[in-house]
Length: 219
Image (cartoon, rainbow, N blue to C red; front, side, top):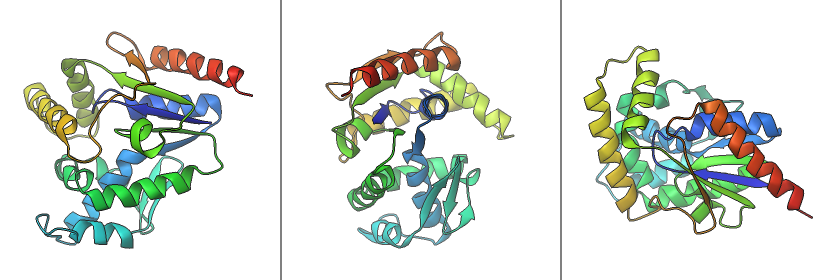
């Protein structure tokens, strides 16, 4: 079974998806980390972001592996680095590139083949896995998502203010909704789950119940 969790940045998709996968005994696919890895590689190699096709060509050369929560780029563990503010600001170049998206969706489908998977991102239920048996659209208010993002940054020792994070969050929301390729939209058959006021454990409880109900219905 494939379970897709889509939703806006900061909704808690990664945290919830990882916990849900553990509870179900499924594998976890962090697609956002793949785009971040491409952006990191582009930054390191001095890619001209305005050069059509340059980043897509680089993406086709990279070896991106997801291994037990770690992100490996050509064998190097870049788990922490891909979550930095600098890489976050550049990830849109990878996310908006049709060639990069095509390559990473191809890799995502290969990775998921023959597995029970919980996958999260922006277009998992609409583009990458339109035939997924269980689709979830996880959301929360911009303010709630900004508070969570700020807490994550502070835990990693990065300096930021709530206003800075909120402004970045609102800009990201506008960009995600208007992207020419893979925009953030809820799949018609996805169940929307708002997480404001809920702990991560409460959200996972709710999603686990949904998935197990679908499993019980499967032939």
